[in-house]
Length: 105
Image (cartoon, rainbow, N blue to C red; front, side, top):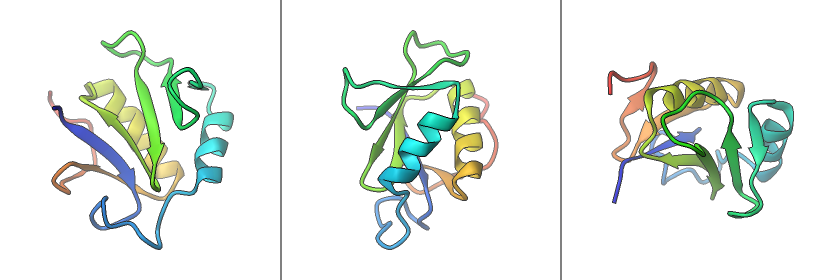
């Protein structure tokens, strides 16, 4: 288990029908962001981030209209907030809590 964060347009991330981040938007985000690289070794829905993280290969995954990662560090949350802004979305935790700044983890 672990703690996941999600970029979503929904009020509660698992209930995003009608407000999904599309596959095309995800591909465009990855293509347009020099810090993101597609990671087909893990699946076409994955991207690696080249930013400063405690993890050797920080990743993000598009799935069912949301973009998620597991156990993000503070730098990854900051990146997610920038990604969410570009997508006109928000960052939510597993329980629906909204993050509007990087936490003090």
